[in-house]
Every structure is written in structure tokens, then in C-alpha cells.
Length: 249
Image (cartoon, rainbow, N blue to C red; front, side, top):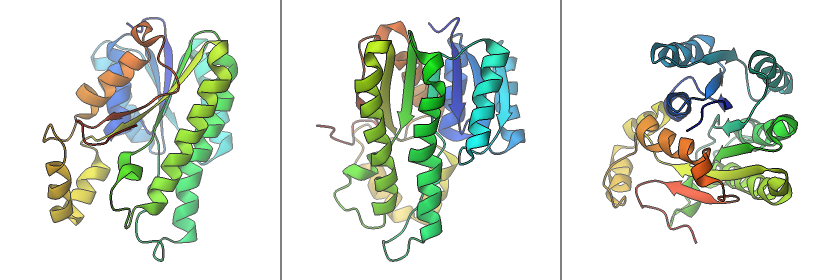
């Protein structure tokens, strides 16, 4: 399905990013797995190699423009181009408005919207003609009660705004841009569940399918589909991959 494609996945050392990287590789893409911790992205690439895929580990911080530029240069140098970009990495600013620090908000902005904006622009020349961008947002902005989630929702909604603009401006140049809003069994979700067991149980109860998604089988496979020719006319969409919980008008 993705044979001959080259993909960059940020935050690919664990959780959803790792699941996406594995799924893309399973369908034939060569995958550059970028993340802050070298040992984690190396493990993702080891798993891909174990399955017969091709992967390149890249240690780097998405908040650092030099690291992003170096990542794109390395991928083009190693694989000859880029057809798929998945912006997954994100530091999450959580808490009430009076409790979220300037530093936490800045980290959320730098790792999310700004990194996404930068990577889309850096990859743009390589994506022209047959490119696909998948950015990650969150259904947290659709919550009926936004208490403690305002800052997180704000940075994720900014990603959706950048994505819609890219879909509109670059669609005619052969670049599709979509957003997924997933629920998956990531380390971050596990930590949140442990810290908020009652809220977590109530949260799962509102998912019609009554389960949290799998990083690879549910989220990763859907991203692989979005990047394939089967989704060639899908552009500018925000799609909740969440078992039916969120209503996306």
C-alpha cells in the first residue's frame, strides 16, 4: 500500500508515534523515527527491522529548529525524498488556567503547533506532487467540561487551524493534509489514568465501543490508510479515531 514511500514520524519512540511508525513500515514505507530519546527511537527502528522493514532513527527535539532541519536533511539524504509527514510529538500543558505556568504553555506551543508549522514548511518542497501530511490533535477541545483542559485544547486547536490552511493552500500542488484526533493506549494516557482513576473510568464509559484504541492496530493502521491511494481524495479533514466518542460536525 505504501511501497516506495518515505515517512517521517515525530515522537516515534513510544505510544501512538511508535504505533504509527510500525504500521507505516508494515505497509512498505521507509520510516524515519524521530524522538528526543535516542534509545527509544532506536528500539522502534529495531522492531521495524525485525519485521523486515527499513527505518532510520533520528534523535532530536521538535522544539529545536536546528534539529528539525537536520532531520529533514538526513531523511532526504538517506532515502532520497519525503512523501509522508506525521506530526505526533507533543508536550501537554494540563491543569486549571490559574495553575498552568507560562513555561508549560510555551512548551506545549513549541512542541505542538510551532513544530508542526515548521515541519510542514520544511517538508513542503519534498511533498509536492504526491505528499501526505497527518497531524495529531485531540478531542479534548470537544469536551462538555473544559475544566483543566483549556491550555491543552488551545495548542491542539492551533494545529487543526494550521492543517486546514495547508490543505487549502497546498492541495492543488498534490499535498493532502488531514488531522486525526485519537484515543490510544499510550504511556501518557496510562499515567493520566493512574492519576485520575475515577475520571478515567467515566471517560471510557462515554466511548460507544467501550475501549481505548490500540496504538498500532487502531490508530497506526488508520494513518496508513490516510496516506494511501485509497484516501487520495481526502483532504482538510479532522477525523476522530476514538471509538465514536466525539461528535465532529
